[in-house]
Image 1 (spheres, rainbow, N blue to C red):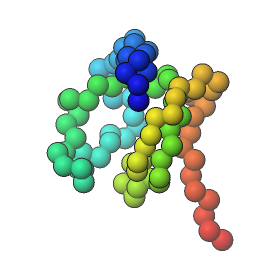
Image 2 (image 1 turned 90 degrees about the horizontal axis):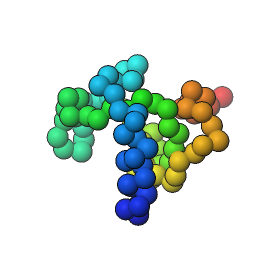
Image 3 (image 1 turned 180 degrees about the horizontal axis):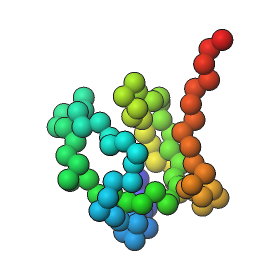
Length: 90
């Protein structure tokens, strides 16, 4: 990602910073990526910004595999964004 886009995102996220975790469930603390997640070190933001990402799949523990930021979306409010659930096989 170009540095200019990282700086733009940083400026957009700063006003959304919050001390509380805006999730109904905390993220998994254990990780297959090495160190466990330390919630006190997480920088939370209010869920008011919508971005588009591509990814390979959802993992069994609910994480995106190979997530890639594609850009910000301004055509959809954050309150309308929901995770697509796979349809069950008949």
